[in-house]
Length: 305
Length: 305
Image (cartoon, rainbow over all chains, first blue to last red):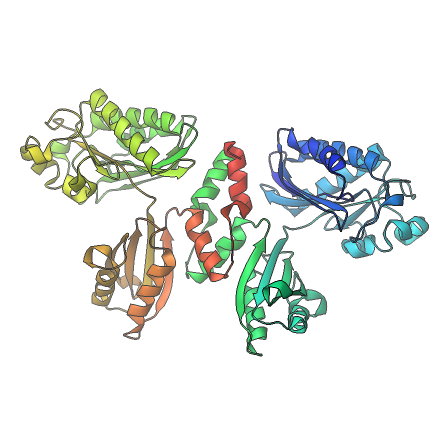
């Protein structure tokens, strides 16, 4: 496991003060075995989203160092922003990438959570695949009431944290630590100005209203472009591939004479998600990922060949 | 350039004696910076095809060591096989893979050729992108008459080698060293028993008879499976993508009511060739290869990020 790679996407409740943001990301910039792929601060959300790739050991060290900086600088008692949050370090999801599976990500999340609670005095909730209680698989329930609401409820049996004392850190709240599959952000733009149509299609395709499994979707108005969008999060492309989502949206839109103008993939996407589409589209029989030169090179580089 | 990666696919005129094959491939198995991805010996062709990936310096050292083993063990005066050949080491093509371009592959082929001729006393012809004479871009012309025919012609002005003396090595002949793009072997199987149809479609799509650029194709009878095949070599997937070949074959076959059963990709394929198909198929706008997680990991591993 130690040579395997995880993605980690910690979210911090700070999207406005550049100096604080710098201190939070600094631990990811100088450590061997950890790579800072992306970081985006949003002032309206007052939130910082960091994308990391690394091996388990250096990743944990850097996350802890970064969390300590965030906890020292962020006071949730005076924090406001549009995004729901329970902590200065709000969520830390681990995603298995290469040479590791979901079981490894769950183990990593749980052992890191124990250490995190001990060293920072911030209580931790385990969520999604790493959850110890079934209802905590759902991050929305873990974050219910946010920092302010959780304050009053944390000692209730159903809100007691999985690690740490049953009281919030006074200024830094609590942290949700979890394990999940890679998330693909896939937007489908429709040649229509009817935002209601986009919302109806989103409702038709998403899992929560009986649509495709592992699909989250909302309808969005792209007024400036004269289009509407079905904005999709695919939480497991192995269960529901990109193509299936596109075909269903195309069919739903087509019933009212609306066509798909284009799609967008926002942020990162695993090669496998696209290779699968190409292989299907080209009717390739008996294809093996080991035939993909770049993935072979990656295995060579990782010494796993 | 020194940190860039090349593919190299040397072909040796030995497909029958396992001990000789072992001596030829041994230099590729133990050297840092060189990776032996594949090797296939064919007894009928009496030929060995090796697929390597590596950096320029270690690749050249290993190739030279391997060539010396092949030259010592193979005597073309007593060699017979179905595949045309001019040398014990018959061809050495260099392919730019990552962090290098065709110009680098041409430079590498030419400088390696000079050293190769000097150290082995085997004369060298430069071919394809590395050719110094336009007619030598075509490997078939370089290999015309094979070992036996070239013997009599090598001192003619039009057959004089690019490096080395204008006479064949007595037992090891000559070697063609070149630079080319990555070659994709793509087979399209048709629901028909008419091998003539496959040959007609091959003729319709290949560049040599006025079809698609960078496409070579032959028709093949797959009698045991009750199918016929259009067997395609794509010599530059950036010029003619896989999809274009498939669509044209599908259209030609469709005109006589024959359908494409499936396709096969034989051997390695660059991720970019398939990603391009997926992105087109999914109508993704503004896509950047840097969004592909695995390619980012590869860049990180290579230290080029």
